[in-house]
Image (tube, rainbow, N blue to C red; front, side):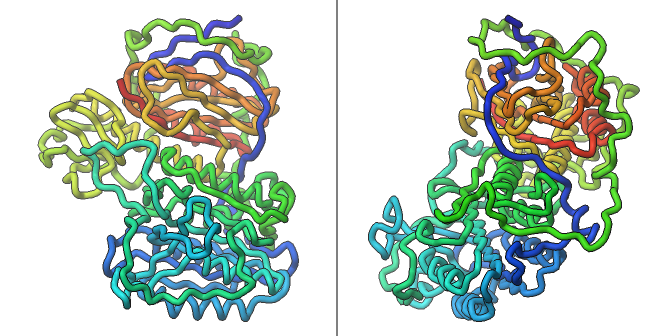
Length: 592
Protein backbone atom coordinates (compact mmCIF):
# COMPACT_ATOMS: atom_id res chain seq x y z
CA UNK A 1 0.00 0.00 0.00
CA UNK A 2 1.31 3.45 -0.95
CA UNK A 3 2.02 5.71 2.00
CA UNK A 4 0.90 9.34 1.80
CA UNK A 5 3.38 12.07 1.17
CA UNK A 6 3.94 14.60 3.96
CA UNK A 7 3.59 18.17 2.76
CA UNK A 8 4.19 21.44 4.46
CA UNK A 9 1.03 23.49 4.15
CA UNK A 10 -1.90 23.50 6.53
CA UNK A 11 -3.22 20.15 5.34
CA UNK A 12 -1.82 16.65 4.94
CA UNK A 13 -2.77 14.37 2.11
CA UNK A 14 -3.87 10.97 3.36
CA UNK A 15 -4.90 8.76 0.45
CA UNK A 16 -6.93 8.94 -2.73
CA UNK A 17 -9.92 6.79 -3.51
CA UNK A 18 -11.72 6.43 -6.80
CA UNK A 19 -15.45 5.86 -6.57
CA UNK A 20 -18.73 6.43 -8.38
CA UNK A 21 -20.39 9.84 -8.84
CA UNK A 22 -21.77 12.06 -11.57
CA UNK A 23 -22.28 15.49 -13.08
CA UNK A 24 -20.69 18.24 -15.06
CA UNK A 25 -17.93 20.43 -16.45
CA UNK A 26 -18.25 23.57 -18.48
CA UNK A 27 -17.30 25.95 -21.25
CA UNK A 28 -16.39 29.60 -21.31
CA UNK A 29 -19.20 32.21 -21.00
CA UNK A 30 -19.14 35.61 -22.66
CA UNK A 31 -17.35 34.04 -25.65
CA UNK A 32 -20.76 32.72 -26.68
CA UNK A 33 -22.50 36.05 -26.88
CA UNK A 34 -19.55 37.46 -28.78
CA UNK A 35 -19.91 34.57 -31.20
CA UNK A 36 -23.57 35.25 -31.92
CA UNK A 37 -25.05 32.73 -29.47
CA UNK A 38 -28.74 33.15 -28.70
CA UNK A 39 -31.07 31.54 -26.22
CA UNK A 40 -34.10 29.77 -27.63
CA UNK A 41 -37.10 27.85 -26.41
CA UNK A 42 -36.88 24.10 -27.09
CA UNK A 43 -40.62 24.12 -27.81
CA UNK A 44 -40.19 26.80 -30.45
CA UNK A 45 -42.23 29.51 -28.75
CA UNK A 46 -41.16 32.80 -27.17
CA UNK A 47 -38.86 33.49 -24.21
CA UNK A 48 -40.13 36.18 -21.84
CA UNK A 49 -38.86 37.58 -18.55
CA UNK A 50 -39.74 39.70 -15.53
CA UNK A 51 -36.71 40.70 -13.45
CA UNK A 52 -36.86 42.51 -10.07
CA UNK A 53 -33.98 43.94 -8.03
CA UNK A 54 -34.27 46.04 -4.85
CA UNK A 55 -31.50 47.76 -2.88
CA UNK A 56 -33.18 50.97 -1.75
CA UNK A 57 -35.44 49.87 1.10
CA UNK A 58 -37.01 52.81 2.87
CA UNK A 59 -37.57 51.33 6.34
CA UNK A 60 -35.29 48.29 6.62
CA UNK A 61 -31.57 47.85 5.96
CA UNK A 62 -30.58 48.71 2.40
CA UNK A 63 -28.83 46.18 0.17
CA UNK A 64 -25.84 46.76 -2.10
CA UNK A 65 -26.03 44.40 -5.06
CA UNK A 66 -29.61 43.43 -5.90
CA UNK A 67 -30.12 46.11 -8.56
CA UNK A 68 -26.81 45.15 -10.14
CA UNK A 69 -28.04 41.55 -10.15
CA UNK A 70 -31.21 42.52 -11.99
CA UNK A 71 -29.24 44.60 -14.48
CA UNK A 72 -26.83 41.72 -15.10
CA UNK A 73 -29.60 39.18 -15.77
CA UNK A 74 -31.46 41.61 -18.05
CA UNK A 75 -28.27 42.37 -19.98
CA UNK A 76 -27.55 38.67 -20.39
CA UNK A 77 -31.06 37.85 -21.57
CA UNK A 78 -31.11 40.70 -24.08
CA UNK A 79 -27.62 39.90 -25.35
CA UNK A 80 -28.87 36.37 -25.96
CA UNK A 81 -31.73 37.62 -28.09
CA UNK A 82 -34.64 37.79 -25.62
CA UNK A 83 -36.85 40.72 -26.57
CA UNK A 84 -39.68 40.56 -24.05
CA UNK A 85 -37.83 41.56 -20.87
CA UNK A 86 -39.38 43.78 -18.18
CA UNK A 87 -37.23 45.03 -15.29
CA UNK A 88 -38.37 46.67 -12.06
CA UNK A 89 -35.77 48.13 -9.71
CA UNK A 90 -36.00 49.96 -6.38
CA UNK A 91 -39.03 52.32 -6.26
CA UNK A 92 -40.38 50.86 -9.53
CA UNK A 93 -40.94 47.57 -7.69
CA UNK A 94 -43.87 48.61 -5.49
CA UNK A 95 -46.61 46.02 -5.06
CA UNK A 96 -49.00 47.61 -7.55
CA UNK A 97 -46.31 47.64 -10.26
CA UNK A 98 -45.16 44.08 -9.56
CA UNK A 99 -48.72 42.74 -9.76
CA UNK A 100 -49.46 44.81 -12.86
CA UNK A 101 -46.37 43.64 -14.75
CA UNK A 102 -46.66 39.99 -13.81
CA UNK A 103 -50.37 40.02 -14.76
CA UNK A 104 -49.51 41.64 -18.09
CA UNK A 105 -46.86 39.00 -18.66
CA UNK A 106 -49.44 36.28 -18.01
CA UNK A 107 -51.70 37.89 -20.62
CA UNK A 108 -48.87 37.94 -23.20
CA UNK A 109 -47.91 34.33 -22.54
CA UNK A 110 -48.70 31.76 -25.22
CA UNK A 111 -48.60 27.99 -25.34
CA UNK A 112 -45.06 26.56 -24.95
CA UNK A 113 -43.50 29.90 -23.95
CA UNK A 114 -40.55 29.92 -21.55
CA UNK A 115 -40.89 32.41 -18.67
CA UNK A 116 -37.98 33.69 -16.56
CA UNK A 117 -38.97 35.20 -13.21
CA UNK A 118 -36.17 36.61 -11.06
CA UNK A 119 -36.20 38.59 -7.84
CA UNK A 120 -33.22 39.85 -5.82
CA UNK A 121 -33.81 41.59 -2.51
CA UNK A 122 -34.78 41.06 1.10
CA UNK A 123 -36.80 38.09 2.26
CA UNK A 124 -38.25 36.88 5.52
CA UNK A 125 -40.75 34.33 6.82
CA UNK A 126 -44.27 34.54 8.21
CA UNK A 127 -46.65 31.93 9.57
CA UNK A 128 -48.24 30.06 6.67
CA UNK A 129 -51.73 31.11 5.59
CA UNK A 130 -52.54 27.76 3.96
CA UNK A 131 -52.23 25.15 6.70
CA UNK A 132 -49.86 22.33 5.77
CA UNK A 133 -48.33 24.13 2.80
CA UNK A 134 -44.89 24.46 4.39
CA UNK A 135 -42.91 21.79 6.28
CA UNK A 136 -42.12 24.13 9.18
CA UNK A 137 -45.35 26.13 9.10
CA UNK A 138 -43.56 29.26 7.83
CA UNK A 139 -44.13 30.89 4.45
CA UNK A 140 -41.44 32.69 2.47
CA UNK A 141 -42.10 36.39 1.89
CA UNK A 142 -40.42 38.86 -0.50
CA UNK A 143 -40.16 42.43 0.79
CA UNK A 144 -40.69 45.44 -1.47
CA UNK A 145 -39.04 48.89 -1.06
CA UNK A 146 -41.80 50.52 1.01
CA UNK A 147 -42.37 47.68 3.46
CA UNK A 148 -42.68 48.52 7.15
CA UNK A 149 -44.69 47.11 10.05
CA UNK A 150 -47.45 49.70 9.77
CA UNK A 151 -50.89 49.11 8.24
CA UNK A 152 -49.92 50.96 5.04
CA UNK A 153 -46.42 49.49 4.86
CA UNK A 154 -47.71 45.95 5.39
CA UNK A 155 -49.05 45.95 1.83
CA UNK A 156 -45.57 46.29 0.32
CA UNK A 157 -44.60 42.63 0.19
CA UNK A 158 -45.33 39.58 -1.96
CA UNK A 159 -46.05 36.20 -0.43
CA UNK A 160 -44.43 33.06 -1.78
CA UNK A 161 -47.92 31.65 -2.30
CA UNK A 162 -48.74 34.63 -4.53
CA UNK A 163 -45.79 33.88 -6.79
CA UNK A 164 -47.04 30.28 -6.92
CA UNK A 165 -50.46 31.64 -7.93
CA UNK A 166 -49.01 33.49 -10.91
CA UNK A 167 -46.75 30.59 -11.85
CA UNK A 168 -49.86 28.41 -12.01
CA UNK A 169 -51.40 30.99 -14.39
CA UNK A 170 -48.36 30.67 -16.66
CA UNK A 171 -48.61 26.89 -16.56
CA UNK A 172 -52.33 26.97 -17.37
CA UNK A 173 -51.41 28.88 -20.52
CA UNK A 174 -49.04 26.07 -21.47
CA UNK A 175 -45.79 27.79 -20.45
CA UNK A 176 -42.72 26.53 -18.58
CA UNK A 177 -41.21 28.70 -15.82
CA UNK A 178 -37.73 29.22 -14.36
CA UNK A 179 -38.00 31.09 -11.04
CA UNK A 180 -34.86 32.57 -9.44
CA UNK A 181 -35.11 33.81 -5.83
CA UNK A 182 -31.88 35.57 -4.82
CA UNK A 183 -33.08 36.28 -1.29
CA UNK A 184 -33.04 34.48 2.03
CA UNK A 185 -35.88 34.03 4.44
CA UNK A 186 -34.45 33.07 7.79
CA UNK A 187 -31.83 31.14 9.70
CA UNK A 188 -28.18 31.73 10.44
CA UNK A 189 -24.77 30.58 9.24
CA UNK A 190 -22.83 27.38 9.56
CA UNK A 191 -19.48 29.19 9.78
CA UNK A 192 -19.26 32.13 12.17
CA UNK A 193 -17.92 35.53 11.15
CA UNK A 194 -14.79 36.73 12.94
CA UNK A 195 -15.91 39.71 15.08
CA UNK A 196 -12.95 41.78 13.80
CA UNK A 197 -14.20 41.56 10.22
CA UNK A 198 -16.19 44.21 8.41
CA UNK A 199 -19.97 43.83 8.62
CA UNK A 200 -21.40 41.50 5.98
CA UNK A 201 -24.54 42.25 4.00
CA UNK A 202 -27.30 39.61 4.03
CA UNK A 203 -30.56 39.46 2.09
CA UNK A 204 -32.76 38.76 5.05
CA UNK A 205 -34.50 40.79 7.73
CA UNK A 206 -35.59 39.51 11.14
CA UNK A 207 -39.08 38.21 11.60
CA UNK A 208 -41.62 40.79 12.67
CA UNK A 209 -45.13 41.10 14.01
CA UNK A 210 -47.84 42.90 12.07
CA UNK A 211 -50.50 44.21 14.44
CA UNK A 212 -52.59 45.26 11.44
CA UNK A 213 -52.05 43.50 8.10
CA UNK A 214 -53.76 45.18 5.16
CA UNK A 215 -52.30 42.87 2.51
CA UNK A 216 -55.03 41.13 0.50
CA UNK A 217 -53.27 38.16 -1.13
CA UNK A 218 -53.94 37.28 -4.74
CA UNK A 219 -55.35 33.77 -4.89
CA UNK A 220 -57.95 31.51 -6.50
CA UNK A 221 -59.09 27.91 -6.41
CA UNK A 222 -56.41 26.75 -8.88
CA UNK A 223 -53.52 27.79 -6.63
CA UNK A 224 -51.02 25.08 -5.74
CA UNK A 225 -50.49 24.32 -2.09
CA UNK A 226 -46.72 24.35 -2.55
CA UNK A 227 -44.02 24.36 -5.23
CA UNK A 228 -44.35 20.58 -5.51
CA UNK A 229 -47.91 20.96 -6.80
CA UNK A 230 -46.68 22.74 -9.93
CA UNK A 231 -46.03 20.87 -13.18
CA UNK A 232 -43.56 22.73 -15.40
CA UNK A 233 -41.49 24.96 -13.13
CA UNK A 234 -37.85 24.98 -12.00
CA UNK A 235 -36.94 26.87 -8.82
CA UNK A 236 -33.48 28.14 -7.89
CA UNK A 237 -33.17 29.66 -4.41
CA UNK A 238 -30.05 31.33 -2.98
CA UNK A 239 -30.05 29.24 0.22
CA UNK A 240 -32.21 26.81 2.13
CA UNK A 241 -34.84 27.92 4.62
CA UNK A 242 -32.40 27.92 7.53
CA UNK A 243 -29.35 29.75 6.14
CA UNK A 244 -28.52 33.37 5.34
CA UNK A 245 -27.51 34.46 1.84
CA UNK A 246 -24.60 36.94 1.86
CA UNK A 247 -23.87 39.51 -0.78
CA UNK A 248 -20.47 38.51 -2.15
CA UNK A 249 -17.54 39.96 -4.02
CA UNK A 250 -17.24 38.84 -7.62
CA UNK A 251 -13.68 38.92 -9.01
CA UNK A 252 -13.22 41.83 -11.38
CA UNK A 253 -16.52 43.50 -10.45
CA UNK A 254 -16.86 46.49 -8.14
CA UNK A 255 -19.18 46.30 -5.17
CA UNK A 256 -21.20 43.37 -3.89
CA UNK A 257 -23.49 40.99 -5.74
CA UNK A 258 -25.75 38.02 -5.27
CA UNK A 259 -23.85 34.87 -6.18
CA UNK A 260 -27.00 33.14 -7.46
CA UNK A 261 -27.97 35.94 -9.85
CA UNK A 262 -24.41 36.18 -11.14
CA UNK A 263 -24.29 32.43 -11.76
CA UNK A 264 -27.67 32.42 -13.50
CA UNK A 265 -26.61 35.26 -15.81
CA UNK A 266 -23.51 33.31 -16.83
CA UNK A 267 -25.57 30.16 -17.34
CA UNK A 268 -27.99 32.08 -19.59
CA UNK A 269 -25.00 33.21 -21.67
CA UNK A 270 -24.20 29.57 -22.38
CA UNK A 271 -21.86 28.44 -19.65
CA UNK A 272 -24.24 25.68 -18.53
CA UNK A 273 -24.09 23.84 -21.86
CA UNK A 274 -21.70 21.24 -20.53
CA UNK A 275 -21.46 18.95 -23.53
CA UNK A 276 -21.75 21.69 -26.17
CA UNK A 277 -24.84 20.11 -27.70
CA UNK A 278 -26.79 23.37 -27.71
CA UNK A 279 -29.23 22.09 -25.08
CA UNK A 280 -29.10 23.01 -21.40
CA UNK A 281 -30.95 20.42 -19.35
CA UNK A 282 -32.35 21.22 -15.93
CA UNK A 283 -29.62 19.04 -14.46
CA UNK A 284 -26.94 21.01 -16.31
CA UNK A 285 -28.48 24.32 -15.22
CA UNK A 286 -28.81 23.29 -11.58
CA UNK A 287 -25.34 21.75 -11.35
CA UNK A 288 -23.55 24.62 -13.04
CA UNK A 289 -25.22 27.32 -10.96
CA UNK A 290 -24.77 25.34 -7.73
CA UNK A 291 -21.01 24.97 -8.27
CA UNK A 292 -20.44 28.62 -9.23
CA UNK A 293 -22.32 29.88 -6.16
CA UNK A 294 -20.50 27.42 -3.88
CA UNK A 295 -17.14 28.69 -5.15
CA UNK A 296 -17.91 32.41 -5.13
CA UNK A 297 -19.31 32.29 -1.59
CA UNK A 298 -16.38 30.32 -0.08
CA UNK A 299 -18.82 27.55 0.85
CA UNK A 300 -21.21 29.92 2.67
CA UNK A 301 -24.00 29.22 0.16
CA UNK A 302 -25.52 25.98 -1.02
CA UNK A 303 -28.37 26.81 -3.34
CA UNK A 304 -31.65 24.92 -3.40
CA UNK A 305 -32.98 23.65 -6.72
CA UNK A 306 -36.45 22.16 -7.16
CA UNK A 307 -38.07 20.85 -10.31
CA UNK A 308 -41.74 19.98 -10.59
CA UNK A 309 -42.47 16.28 -9.99
CA UNK A 310 -43.51 15.60 -13.62
CA UNK A 311 -40.17 16.93 -14.88
CA UNK A 312 -37.09 14.77 -15.50
CA UNK A 313 -34.02 16.96 -14.84
CA UNK A 314 -31.61 14.60 -16.61
CA UNK A 315 -33.40 14.99 -19.93
CA UNK A 316 -35.82 17.92 -19.73
CA UNK A 317 -34.31 20.91 -21.54
CA UNK A 318 -34.41 24.24 -19.73
CA UNK A 319 -33.43 26.21 -22.84
CA UNK A 320 -31.53 25.79 -26.08
CA UNK A 321 -28.64 27.75 -27.58
CA UNK A 322 -28.29 28.62 -31.23
CA UNK A 323 -25.47 30.37 -33.02
CA UNK A 324 -25.93 32.75 -35.91
CA UNK A 325 -22.25 33.24 -36.76
CA UNK A 326 -19.07 31.23 -36.36
CA UNK A 327 -17.25 31.79 -33.08
CA UNK A 328 -13.66 32.98 -33.48
CA UNK A 329 -11.65 31.51 -30.65
CA UNK A 330 -10.17 34.00 -28.22
CA UNK A 331 -7.55 33.58 -25.51
CA UNK A 332 -9.96 31.85 -23.16
CA UNK A 333 -10.88 29.25 -25.79
CA UNK A 334 -7.51 28.79 -27.43
CA UNK A 335 -6.33 25.37 -28.46
CA UNK A 336 -3.72 23.74 -26.29
CA UNK A 337 -0.66 24.03 -28.49
CA UNK A 338 1.65 21.52 -26.96
CA UNK A 339 0.72 22.49 -23.42
CA UNK A 340 -1.07 19.30 -22.53
CA UNK A 341 0.67 16.24 -23.80
CA UNK A 342 -0.22 12.64 -23.23
CA UNK A 343 3.20 11.43 -22.15
CA UNK A 344 4.17 10.85 -18.53
CA UNK A 345 6.52 13.08 -16.59
CA UNK A 346 9.96 11.54 -16.32
CA UNK A 347 10.14 9.19 -13.38
CA UNK A 348 6.37 9.32 -12.77
CA UNK A 349 4.60 6.84 -15.04
CA UNK A 350 0.85 6.40 -14.76
CA UNK A 351 -0.28 3.78 -12.28
CA UNK A 352 -3.61 2.32 -11.12
CA UNK A 353 -5.54 4.51 -8.69
CA UNK A 354 -5.10 3.99 -5.00
CA UNK A 355 -7.73 2.15 -3.02
CA UNK A 356 -9.34 3.29 0.19
CA UNK A 357 -7.17 2.92 3.25
CA UNK A 358 -7.16 3.94 6.88
CA UNK A 359 -5.24 7.13 7.37
CA UNK A 360 -1.75 6.32 8.66
CA UNK A 361 -0.10 8.27 11.43
CA UNK A 362 1.40 11.44 9.96
CA UNK A 363 4.31 13.29 11.55
CA UNK A 364 4.09 17.02 12.20
CA UNK A 365 4.72 18.72 8.88
CA UNK A 366 5.00 22.37 9.85
CA UNK A 367 8.71 21.92 10.50
CA UNK A 368 9.41 21.61 6.77
CA UNK A 369 10.11 25.23 5.87
CA UNK A 370 8.52 26.76 2.80
CA UNK A 371 10.55 28.77 0.35
CA UNK A 372 9.72 31.86 -1.58
CA UNK A 373 10.21 31.37 -5.31
CA UNK A 374 13.06 33.54 -6.63
CA UNK A 375 11.92 36.31 -8.92
CA UNK A 376 13.78 34.79 -11.84
CA UNK A 377 11.60 31.67 -11.66
CA UNK A 378 8.37 33.58 -12.21
CA UNK A 379 6.67 33.23 -15.61
CA UNK A 380 5.42 36.80 -15.14
CA UNK A 381 3.42 38.90 -12.71
CA UNK A 382 -0.32 39.20 -12.35
CA UNK A 383 -1.87 41.92 -14.44
CA UNK A 384 -4.99 42.70 -12.44
CA UNK A 385 -6.20 46.28 -12.54
CA UNK A 386 -7.61 46.55 -9.02
CA UNK A 387 -5.09 46.71 -6.16
CA UNK A 388 -5.53 44.73 -2.96
CA UNK A 389 -7.02 47.02 -0.32
CA UNK A 390 -5.25 46.48 3.00
CA UNK A 391 -6.37 47.92 6.35
CA UNK A 392 -5.09 47.71 9.92
CA UNK A 393 -7.69 46.95 12.56
CA UNK A 394 -6.73 50.13 14.47
CA UNK A 395 -6.91 52.28 11.33
CA UNK A 396 -3.20 53.16 11.14
CA UNK A 397 -1.71 52.94 7.65
CA UNK A 398 1.90 53.54 8.68
CA UNK A 399 2.40 49.79 9.21
CA UNK A 400 2.24 49.19 5.47
CA UNK A 401 4.90 51.58 4.17
CA UNK A 402 7.31 48.68 3.59
CA UNK A 403 4.71 46.25 2.18
CA UNK A 404 5.77 45.65 -1.43
CA UNK A 405 3.94 42.70 -2.99
CA UNK A 406 5.57 40.91 -5.90
CA UNK A 407 2.57 40.51 -8.18
CA UNK A 408 -0.08 43.15 -7.41
CA UNK A 409 -0.32 46.74 -6.14
CA UNK A 410 -1.48 47.29 -2.56
CA UNK A 411 -3.57 50.21 -1.31
CA UNK A 412 -3.68 51.12 2.40
CA UNK A 413 -7.25 51.98 3.46
CA UNK A 414 -9.36 52.27 6.60
CA UNK A 415 -11.23 49.23 8.03
CA UNK A 416 -14.50 50.93 7.03
CA UNK A 417 -13.42 51.34 3.38
CA UNK A 418 -14.34 47.84 2.18
CA UNK A 419 -10.81 46.36 2.49
CA UNK A 420 -9.85 43.04 0.94
CA UNK A 421 -7.68 42.25 3.98
CA UNK A 422 -7.69 43.45 7.58
CA UNK A 423 -4.48 43.00 9.60
CA UNK A 424 -4.68 42.88 13.39
CA UNK A 425 -1.53 44.62 14.74
CA UNK A 426 -1.97 42.91 18.13
CA UNK A 427 -2.39 39.25 17.13
CA UNK A 428 -0.92 39.68 13.60
CA UNK A 429 -3.89 37.73 12.17
CA UNK A 430 -5.09 38.55 8.65
CA UNK A 431 -8.86 38.57 8.09
CA UNK A 432 -10.84 38.57 4.86
CA UNK A 433 -14.63 38.59 4.50
CA UNK A 434 -15.26 37.28 7.99
CA UNK A 435 -12.59 34.55 8.02
CA UNK A 436 -9.02 34.43 9.29
CA UNK A 437 -6.83 33.88 6.24
CA UNK A 438 -3.56 33.52 8.14
CA UNK A 439 -2.53 33.61 11.80
CA UNK A 440 0.53 35.38 13.21
CA UNK A 441 1.69 37.17 10.04
CA UNK A 442 4.13 40.00 10.71
CA UNK A 443 4.46 43.00 8.40
CA UNK A 444 7.47 41.50 6.59
CA UNK A 445 5.34 38.54 5.45
CA UNK A 446 2.24 40.51 4.47
CA UNK A 447 3.33 40.78 0.79
CA UNK A 448 2.93 37.02 0.26
CA UNK A 449 -0.60 37.16 1.75
CA UNK A 450 -1.44 40.11 -0.50
CA UNK A 451 -0.17 38.26 -3.58
CA UNK A 452 -2.09 35.19 -2.50
CA UNK A 453 -5.30 37.27 -2.21
CA UNK A 454 -4.89 38.51 -5.78
CA UNK A 455 -4.21 34.97 -6.98
CA UNK A 456 -7.33 33.60 -5.28
CA UNK A 457 -9.37 36.39 -6.84
CA UNK A 458 -8.11 35.33 -10.25
CA UNK A 459 -8.64 31.62 -9.53
CA UNK A 460 -12.26 32.34 -8.64
CA UNK A 461 -12.73 34.24 -11.87
CA UNK A 462 -11.28 31.43 -13.96
CA UNK A 463 -13.21 28.76 -12.07
CA UNK A 464 -16.48 30.64 -12.54
CA UNK A 465 -15.86 30.69 -16.26
CA UNK A 466 -15.46 26.92 -16.60
CA UNK A 467 -16.24 25.07 -13.37
CA UNK A 468 -15.37 21.53 -12.39
CA UNK A 469 -17.78 20.03 -9.89
CA UNK A 470 -16.03 19.68 -6.52
CA UNK A 471 -17.20 19.57 -2.92
CA UNK A 472 -15.36 19.69 0.39
CA UNK A 473 -16.85 17.60 3.17
CA UNK A 474 -18.15 17.42 5.86
CA UNK A 475 -19.34 21.07 5.83
CA UNK A 476 -18.19 24.69 5.71
CA UNK A 477 -17.45 25.00 9.43
CA UNK A 478 -14.02 26.06 10.58
CA UNK A 479 -11.95 22.86 10.67
CA UNK A 480 -9.73 22.05 13.65
CA UNK A 481 -6.25 20.54 13.96
CA UNK A 482 -6.24 16.82 13.32
CA UNK A 483 -9.65 16.72 11.67
CA UNK A 484 -10.08 15.13 8.26
CA UNK A 485 -11.78 16.84 5.34
CA UNK A 486 -12.50 15.16 2.04
CA UNK A 487 -12.19 16.64 -1.42
CA UNK A 488 -14.75 15.07 -3.75
CA UNK A 489 -14.43 15.60 -7.51
CA UNK A 490 -17.28 14.48 -9.77
CA UNK A 491 -17.42 13.57 -13.46
CA UNK A 492 -13.69 13.06 -13.87
CA UNK A 493 -13.75 9.60 -15.45
CA UNK A 494 -10.97 9.31 -18.08
CA UNK A 495 -9.90 12.89 -17.41
CA UNK A 496 -6.49 14.04 -16.24
CA UNK A 497 -6.63 15.59 -12.78
CA UNK A 498 -4.35 18.14 -11.14
CA UNK A 499 -5.17 19.06 -7.56
CA UNK A 500 -3.27 21.57 -5.47
CA UNK A 501 -3.68 23.78 -2.42
CA UNK A 502 -2.81 27.44 -1.86
CA UNK A 503 -2.31 28.05 1.87
CA UNK A 504 -2.99 31.33 3.65
CA UNK A 505 0.59 32.55 3.18
CA UNK A 506 0.62 31.65 -0.52
CA UNK A 507 2.47 28.33 -0.25
CA UNK A 508 1.62 25.87 -3.02
CA UNK A 509 1.01 22.23 -2.15
CA UNK A 510 0.64 19.63 -4.91
CA UNK A 511 -1.96 17.07 -3.85
CA UNK A 512 -2.59 15.03 -7.00
CA UNK A 513 -0.97 13.34 -8.79
CA UNK A 514 1.90 12.33 -6.52
CA UNK A 515 3.81 9.07 -6.41
CA UNK A 516 1.97 6.29 -8.20
CA UNK A 517 -1.30 8.18 -8.76
CA UNK A 518 -3.00 7.46 -12.06
CA UNK A 519 -2.55 10.13 -14.69
CA UNK A 520 -6.16 9.69 -15.83
CA UNK A 521 -9.03 8.99 -13.44
CA UNK A 522 -10.61 5.64 -14.23
CA UNK A 523 -13.89 6.19 -12.43
CA UNK A 524 -16.38 9.03 -12.28
CA UNK A 525 -15.22 10.50 -8.97
CA UNK A 526 -11.97 11.17 -7.16
CA UNK A 527 -12.07 11.40 -3.37
CA UNK A 528 -9.05 12.64 -1.51
CA UNK A 529 -8.94 12.80 2.32
CA UNK A 530 -6.85 15.58 3.85
CA UNK A 531 -5.81 16.07 7.47
CA UNK A 532 -5.84 19.57 8.94
CA UNK A 533 -2.61 20.84 10.47
CA UNK A 534 -0.46 23.93 10.88
CA UNK A 535 -0.22 26.61 9.64
CA UNK A 536 -3.89 27.39 10.18
CA UNK A 537 -6.06 29.81 8.23
CA UNK A 538 -7.34 29.66 4.67
CA UNK A 539 -6.82 26.71 2.36
CA UNK A 540 -7.78 27.14 -1.29
CA UNK A 541 -8.22 23.75 -2.93
CA UNK A 542 -7.89 24.00 -6.72
CA UNK A 543 -8.67 21.25 -9.23
CA UNK A 544 -7.92 21.33 -12.96
CA UNK A 545 -9.19 18.55 -15.21
CA UNK A 546 -8.80 17.89 -18.91
CA UNK A 547 -9.26 15.08 -21.43
CA UNK A 548 -5.49 14.86 -21.83
CA UNK A 549 -2.61 14.94 -19.39
CA UNK A 550 -1.42 18.51 -18.73
CA UNK A 551 2.30 17.85 -18.72
CA UNK A 552 3.56 21.44 -18.76
CA UNK A 553 1.17 22.58 -16.04
CA UNK A 554 1.96 19.50 -13.96
CA UNK A 555 5.67 20.23 -14.30
CA UNK A 556 5.15 23.83 -13.21
CA UNK A 557 3.16 22.78 -10.14
CA UNK A 558 5.89 20.35 -9.17
CA UNK A 559 8.39 23.20 -9.46
CA UNK A 560 6.23 25.46 -7.26
CA UNK A 561 5.50 22.76 -4.66
CA UNK A 562 6.32 23.95 -1.13
CA UNK A 563 7.05 27.45 -2.38
CA UNK A 564 5.21 30.72 -1.89
CA UNK A 565 4.36 31.07 -5.53
CA UNK A 566 0.65 31.88 -5.86
CA UNK A 567 1.17 34.52 -8.56
CA UNK A 568 3.36 32.21 -10.60
CA UNK A 569 0.72 29.51 -10.49
CA UNK A 570 -1.79 31.93 -12.04
CA UNK A 571 0.58 32.74 -14.88
CA UNK A 572 1.17 29.03 -15.47
CA UNK A 573 -2.57 28.45 -15.65
CA UNK A 574 -2.91 31.30 -18.15
CA UNK A 575 -0.11 29.81 -20.23
CA UNK A 576 -0.83 26.09 -20.11
CA UNK A 577 -4.58 25.57 -19.64
CA UNK A 578 -5.99 23.40 -22.44
CA UNK A 579 -9.15 24.51 -24.21
CA UNK A 580 -11.31 21.89 -22.50
CA UNK A 581 -10.07 22.61 -18.96
CA UNK A 582 -12.55 22.54 -16.10
CA UNK A 583 -11.52 24.29 -12.89
CA UNK A 584 -12.75 24.24 -9.30
CA UNK A 585 -11.46 26.64 -6.64
CA UNK A 586 -12.92 26.25 -3.15
CA UNK A 587 -11.83 27.61 0.22
CA UNK A 588 -12.01 26.02 3.61
CA UNK A 589 -10.75 27.47 6.87
CA UNK A 590 -8.85 25.90 9.75
CA UNK A 591 -8.00 26.91 13.31
CA UNK A 592 -5.96 25.39 16.18
